[in-house]
Length: 502
Image 1 (cartoon, one colour):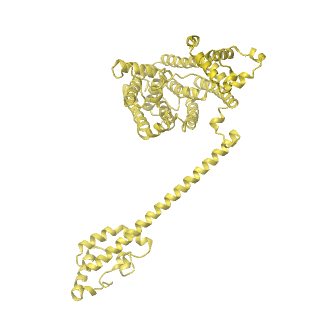
Image 2 (image 1 turned 90 degrees about the horizontal axis):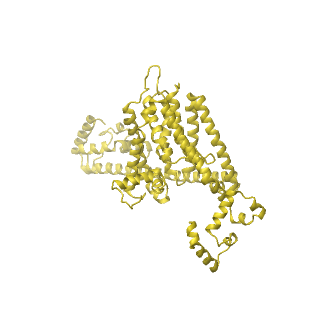
Image 3 (image 1 turned 90 degrees about the vertical axis):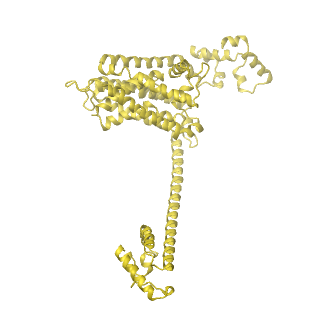
């Protein structure tokens, strides 16, 4: 009702109250036009009926009614109380309805969740049955079996060589189309890595800077390839911290290992892409217009300002994810992060260089080592990574403005990775690959003729095993040792000859 109608109704009710006894007052439609409230007459006409639409309409102007009661003192007390009582009753009914609706939605959500979990389990069992032949055998256990592992290694080796040759073809023959090849290959590798790492201990490695750079570069190439400033920022990132990360993380070209090929490719492909984009005038994305000379020089604001500012955005996001959002999960499941990995691997360049600098500056004691759980270690690594980023950005201006400097720079990085792969195949892989498939049964069952035909590497491995346990045969290893055999093992491990071998 309008304020004028409210005042007229109040004066009319006051006049009738003077002519009648207060206890026998009966307010009817003659004294109040209840139809204006949307009802059909009487008190229920205000919206107190059982219709749900009227209840909802009541909840909208309940506050206005309560204020109206305060402004009109001539309404009888018993009517005022009755109206308030009814209003409160309907408010409780509305709250009850909302509570029941929330409980219903919660029940539906739980049912959907259970149904989804059941479908996932059925899908996982079906996939296991197709891949492994048994619904109870996990795929991660199946791929570790010797025949399967050998087949996967052969496939990975073939795909690794094909990837290298294809990248060379696009970079030399079709440099203006290399960005398409990059999006397809890096996108496939990143999706594969997410599938392999998301449920494992390396889950939070997916939030490292190299993946951030690759994701940003793909988005720029698809959404805004004409933005020269963002492309220049990506040039600084890919040729600076990401490119030199091949040295920091000791990447190696190991064709048969999908993990090593992926780690190398996410660091090596972006600099090659930016080299093609910078020195070959592509129609899709241009870093330099040779005819006008536009953007052929790297400005200081982009070189240092925008590049480092956007790097800090990633650093804040990583700290938020690893130290706040995922901290409990990392501690509970003992997950790996880049900080924890570097802190627990002293042979990595980032470990011993940062530790040496921290000790010289007095931040770390001379006999103190990194503790990945301490706040001091985390601050040191965040600071060291920021300084490392700034240092690796130094040569980017020269690389942006000199073709031959850029070519030599990338050649040195790629040769370093090839050299690491060669060392891995010669010094590590030959022994490790044979040992992972050898068992005591296979060694014992070898006939003298087959032993005589064993390769020199296998003979070297067997002789090494015999030197490490000179008084224990392979057949003895299969049985539980007796006290006499235990003493023999103990004496052999503590003999001067064994110490000399160690």
